[in-house]
Image (cartoon, rainbow, N blue to C red; front, top):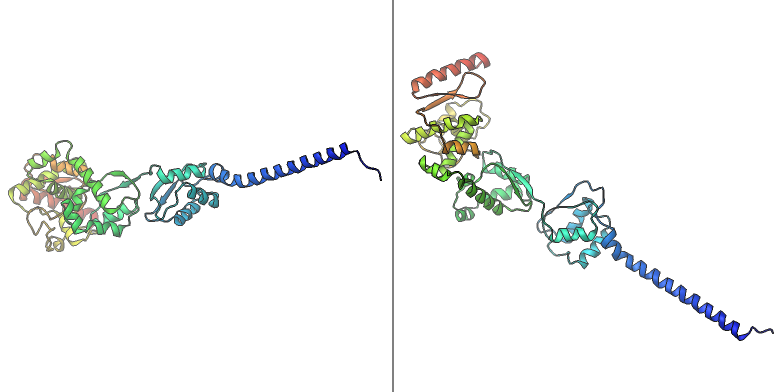
Length: 359
């Protein structure tokens, strides 16, 4: 048999070893790339889709990790659930009770950026709009449109006697703490936190423009001024006329005359759809009915706007004791100092109503 030279055999063995080493290195690189790609992809390359429809995510109070993941999936905030779950564990984001709130998420964020924001980023506030609701349950329903707390829970806070006693209010007077406006607050604000925020806004309102001193000048405290302003609120939408109407009611209060305010009798009966005030309304027995009882009602009949409050604090200085709607469509009123003059104005208005509306 012909034998190869020893030097050639050794060269072939070397080549074979190099080839095997190369294969082994390639295999190790492949394995390393395979196992290394998963964390790299989870951290840097997967995350929030660039075509995100809604940027805001709301995480309810008390949510667990799986519930948060479900919310993220439903809102299309994550594109790789497995990668998100792995990284959340590594970044210590996964908790028994997750951080609650409303957060703005940016399209194209990777999982690391998303988790960092949900864990420690600032919440995106909501704008809570308060209008001139009449009843606490209406306020509760309005507020619940904007924050996490539902209307029933909010109303329970409004009726929590221990809490109300703590803050110095009653069920009847609580509404006087609420100034209609638009407020920024966190979505996960609860009922008590909402009320305390309103108290801060109430303090800010009364601390400006000498309002407390103006109320004292009219012989009123803050609650009484608000109650009277709530009556003015329901008498007219015409802001320039509100100081005139406030002046009428203050004149009546100062001489001990019943206010005889139509809106209080409507509030007492809860007949808010009434087009006309009748004897049923004016004789209805309720402490809110100023046709029946002297002085102010025990609480406001509505939230009072800032123009109505300022009208009570800076009323027109006149001697009018009466007013009624003018015989036109202006929505303004005719004022009178005496009942006889008022009767003339009222007869004119009734004649106008009969002529134009067939009543």
